[in-house]
Length: 278
DNA sequence: CGCATTTCCTGGAGGC
DNA sequence: TGCCTCCAGGAAATGC
Image (cartoon, rainbow, N blue to C red; front, side, top):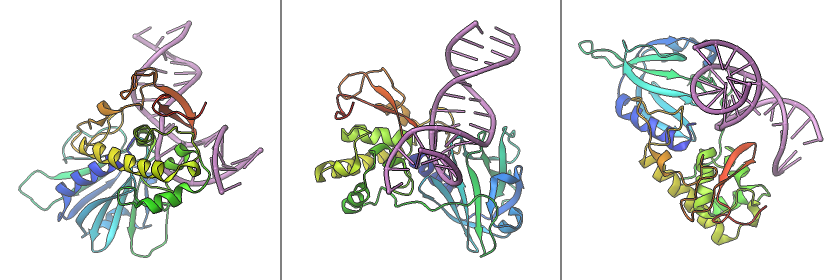
């Protein structure tokens, strides 16, 4: 389940591998996973090179020259890997893009693989018409966010879990980092957002940032579907304090971690560290 | 407006 | 061993 730290890890690794490289052969193996520019992707990408690879929300963005963007939304099980062009093809590989111009060396390529197909690839080029699923807009990034802006987001009356999961409100948090951030701040996931005082809202924003930064340092959390661009696992799952740990002792106080459903998702919290609701 | 529910999809887990 | 059912969840759509 790639969220902000996983997308950031992939973006950094892709940037190291791809910055400055020209794009080569394109193979679209599942047309319905590619959206945006109505032209064939191979044509849209022809004679373009990667300037840099960045992240926005949970999305990985290849910034190209001449100006265009190739956006990867990973959904639940999306993976972007870098490998040799002759590496065995994994099941559910929907897109392959060769890169580099070293004719002497083995050709390398990036691959997009997504078994559950909740993700997709968007080619934003030219001002042409649009095909396929739309790539909706997202709210502000949490890492550079200031306390006043966060306070304004909390001002509506919503359960904290639902609000933090809402990509229009704040971009990049998913189920794991929502629960971990709320635990770090000692706030119950069903607490109504507008009831937080200044100290609590400040603490929650700091908790979100520190949780995300620590997860990025660990290259994200590998539970089942997420892997780095070289196929290795992230390691932040070993540091989860509540997520996925129903019945196990809270790493803060030892009380049993509870699981409820909030915002339609499994939600893990410690009833002692995060008091306040039934 | 907020929130619950449903849909998409596959692989892994558990039951028998 | 081999079915079968259930479940996980990001995002969008629908219903209350």
